[in-house]
Amino acid sequence: MNKAVWQEFKYIKIPDRRLLSGLLYVNVINHNDNDGHDDFIQQLYDIEAGAGSGSVSNNLKYSDPFTNSNGTPTFGAFKDRGRDGMRHSFADYDCFVFHVAGGMSLSGGISLPDSGHFTSFQGGPALLAGGYVTENTGRYYWIDTSVQCSSADINATWYAATDNVSNPLGDNCCHFIKSHLVSRINNASGHGLNQTGGSDPYFYKSRPVQRQTYTSVGTGASIQNPADPATIVNQYVLSDGIYSTEEADGTALGPDSLATVGDGLGGSGDTNEDYYGIDEHERDAGETWNGVSDYSDEGNTYFSPVDTVKIYGKHRLVFDNHYKVVGGSTKNYIFSWSGQNGAHVTDWWDLVIDIGLRGNNPSGSSSHGDSTKSLVKPQININWQPFGETAEFSISDTAHTS
Image (cartoon, rainbow, N blue to C red):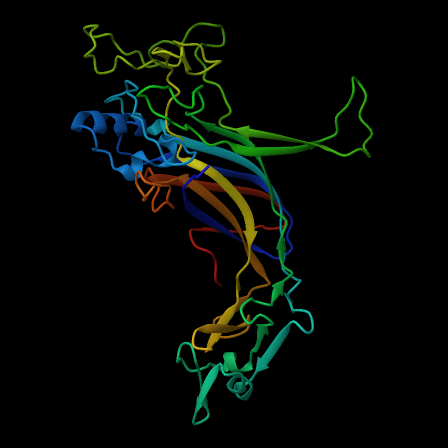
């Protein structure tokens, strides 16, 4: 789909082999110091229409949400939602609740390569004979960096694969984190169209997040044989939840709950004439288009800042490497986890919350490119409520190194 995301990470430090189970909350909102700007979609239209064609950067216009994401990006136009001056940037949010369970096992350690598939070096003389270091008055220096070898480098064991390129070392540490999306709520799931046709835009309103269950299917009132293979059910959630438009007794909510935009002079020049409140149109089908020129709108047409959320475990594992050049250009590598720049931590790991925000397209109109920033300035809040063997934890914006 050529999607481009800007990743934001949160890390929670957790001890080895601890079973965790709990709710993880992820809230993301379009938040420029809570300045009360108009919502993102309306701002784009107002900037483009107010200042003339081309005022919005191609890096934004040809980003994934506003183009046909198959093949070369194709941008149409931004649509007026009739929310000018209504300060609805607050509505550009995406909120998730996950049930997260599992943990990470770090006791396996480094897995050495099979016999006959590597060469090992330890100590200055061995590295010197292998051609990876030079020696001067009893001191050794790496060929590739000219930096003096530390005592950790000299005492470490270095491994070269038979192809002299690959890292022959493996690692038996493994995460067993499983997450289930309980609910996702945003204001961008009401669209029924992938484009409105003509000069109106492509707009991929929200990317679905996968939810998966394994079930045993029954027939009538009986349960299927539990020995039979499970049925895997996938759902792809754009948004959960409903908007209440009336009180519990059926009385319609009034203007103290719902926006009621006046008609003004009733002419085409009214600033907010294209705004529709959430109670004015059928909400079952979302936006619809008659295939010619007319379509109905509803209020649920805001921007969802999140593309996807991934949750997994990660431990600090750094394989140090150096190389020598043979034949004038070929690099032969050696690897170690116990050299000066290597690391293999086995007493704690990080639960990673990887938030993929909908990102810009720095390649502009010509092609899809990797994002260099999020389309909106986000405010991100994480809350982790585990029940298990970990009593204390902290959330960090960077991976833990100690």
